[in-house]
Length: 400
Ligand SMILES: Cc1ncc(COP(=O)(O)O)c(C=O)c1O
Image (cartoon, rainbow, N blue to C red; front, top):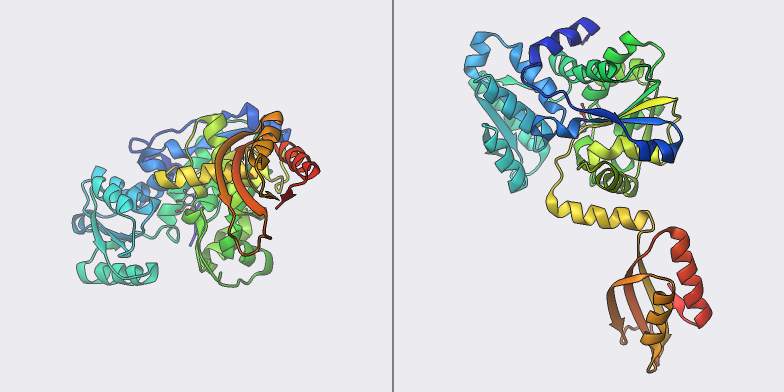
């Protein structure tokens, strides 16, 4: 597999009328926080809500008339599905997307709305993929791989060209890594224009298979694959992507925990008024944790924004806890009249707003005449939480 700068330039002129030129603007709050210029490439504003349109559109445009007449097939319950569906519709090509039977209804509907035929098959992603291969064989559909494909990588690389047009003299670019198509394409484009630019990849620590391959040339399959950055959770990393691209063009890879990703999602919502999904916010999480050596001018790729609405509230809560803006506390106090009012008085004195209270008098672990009060309070920082804990302890409560 080989992708050149010229392939990416060609992809740019091929897909320019199908995709949006997304904003790439400096974030003053993020820059201030980390002490270097941080530009956010907001690809969550791309059509279908992620960069995936770029690669899919370039692949579909490259097909022969005969292939286009037959149609394409892909396996994905995520952004690739939507990218393939819309690109195919815009080119009047039939698309079939295979998803596992467990795929969320919202993903199925979104993909259908972009014009694809969705087939639910199998209990796992692997079973669905096997079926997609079978369909490609039986019906002569072209299989659109999400990353192991030269045209797809060249399409994703157009994001690098766009960034170079939007921001001059970048020192570092930070991008999420799933299969590796996005970072590879972007790196090939940007390094041709500026060989000194550093390209840093970010993976979720729960599923850090490409990180392991990068650091140790080997990997261990994760024991579970749950992470809020589900778009980059690839169980088995692609050796060909590692050998041909990641090992050559990527200068370092770091990992981020789910809490860090949640914090980055909240940061983007609050400061940039921008909705990112877990995978989309992972690169910013890498920057905010301080794990990445930054240059003077850096660009963070916010790669997608397709987050389930019911996930947003959970993530906001997690991100708020991580930042000390929300605290869950359990305190054990004497079970006597006035305890609760004394406790709330201390919280009021420290300007902590109570959101939830739960009173428990029968827990096995409690001594007689003790009661446990769990509460959720709004706070301003970790220092604020510490002060409240000290004040409660001084009063005589056992703070857990
Ligand atoms: C939002 C988002 N970011 C990043 C990625 C990773 O892209 P790649 O597989 O090309 O590394 C994906 C993959 O689906 C994604 O959906």
